[in-house]
Length: 501
Image 1 (cartoon, helix red, strand yellow):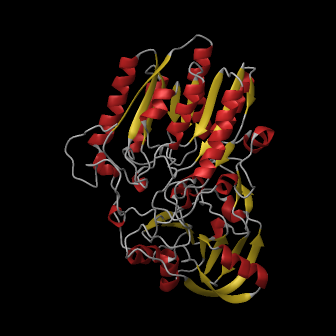
Image 2 (cartoon, rainbow, N blue to C red; image 1 turned 45 degrees about the vertical axis):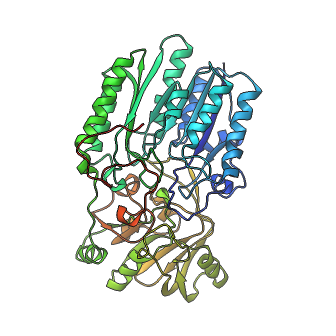
């Protein structure tokens, strides 16, 4: 047997001003890895591609990997980048006949030309290989379109947020295809959505109702006869028609059972839609509340500006409030400011200087009053590194991260990590790699929303969510939706579910 494996992953925030060229998928290495380079980059990691590699080798199959591209969320993917990656995959599919195609995708990729980049790829592959089984591994934040399901054989998405089951999802997506190849199963799928945009801050799988929804999806697989069952919470910061909550269920030839389970998941989510709405607290009140907490580490979440949701990472509202209120023994991760990093590199370790950090990237698609100015700080350059580290896990175990040239700037009260490439803090090594012991800090301020829980929840004493400024805002009033289907909850008050596939 011969398999085609590929990775093309991006969660697109259509409100983000951060551009998405091909280089972003290569993490500073020119072009995304392919062939043996891709195997070397992802084998043994917590990725769906690693699962595909293991499954292919277990089945005695040879395989090709024409591209393995993965980028931090940002604005719409540039057409040149999309065409490069899809061109590699399509060319491989045309070059020979494969027994199976296994795709590690995201499910929320918007390009300059397409609302549904993944669906267009799978549709093109189906036209080339009408009889070849196709398995698709997807993120929980997929905004699902018909083209994905209509042209795939099997699909599965993450059941945890933070996403610590990425490898397992690759396995869940691929095994129905392997069973089909062996004549042991006939995968069929049912999918649908509900008109709702759950706030990302209410999508964690530690929290009701997503916790219960994902437990039920796993029960459908383990004891209910489903080959795969997935509830997608969706990614709401994409102004596209199908943004929002959806689900897909795969069964062995039983379309009625797939539809029954699908309706159960969607109805549960719809009935509890109010629990998916996040309640905001004013920033000053949040930081003042944190200041009264004596035991650390206390996690402060700068959740309006998260790289893993397309944030610029250069907004300074939360950092400025921390400085204004005089919190001490703080580690802040991070401000994206390549210009400031270069200034610190030029000055050298130990240099005392005054910097204007952040506030350099404008956010024109936010409400007019949602702005962030540079923050002037005085301190000492403590650390300079190349910004590379590997995740210790449980999220993305073994994945190599590249923050680009990185510095730690110490104001005396706050150690500020300043980076040149975007990186969400979901792993303790983002601090340890810079010589900062997170356990020794009273406060850890993280530009994160939910993924921080993977690495930091076990060590925290408390968490304070800080509503700053940024394109990951949980205040939908700061965003102008023009293309999402309407009516949709909570942008509109709805009493009845109206599916809008």
